[in-house]
Amino acid sequence: MSKHPDNPFWDDKQDVPVTLFSQIDWDKAEVGGFITAEHVLDRLGRMLEHALGNENPNAAFDEEGFFISLVAAGIKHDGITLTVHTDDHNPPHCHVLVKGEPGEKLRIDLTTGEFMDEVPKKIQPQKKRIKAMFLRNQGALNEIWVSYKGGSDSSEDEGSPEGEDSV
Image (tube, rainbow, N blue to C red; front, side, top):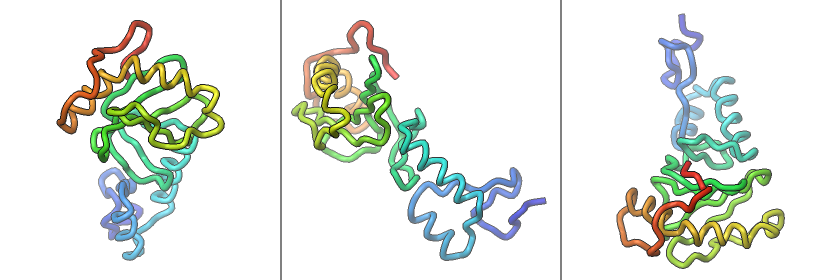
């Protein structure tokens, strides 16, 4: 028997909360009085994973624990990961994750190669390494973006250099 049989935001068959992926879903459940402790723990878990930089390999969540986009693909090397999200906004860009520096927001424009955000102080010492890795992989990252969004390539570079792994 379900813990919450009259809750439309509860999976009665598996007796677990339905994941509330968006602020809109959360607000609907909250207005109806259907938020359970399990819903709160599920969202807090996503918030914690985001804050620690342990992002789900298939989806990205914001600091509030809500779904942003599917993660399309990326390139990982020596503690730096450059990822492209499938349902992201223009301009074409990749997200930079640096191991040991979770929660730091940093994006690079795929067309210009410029940082779109101020480089956080903790990441400043690695700025040149990040930029060099981006430049080596700009073509491959642009191809990932194009495969999901359409548009023209921003670089002639093809593929990943030896030693750098696709994610």
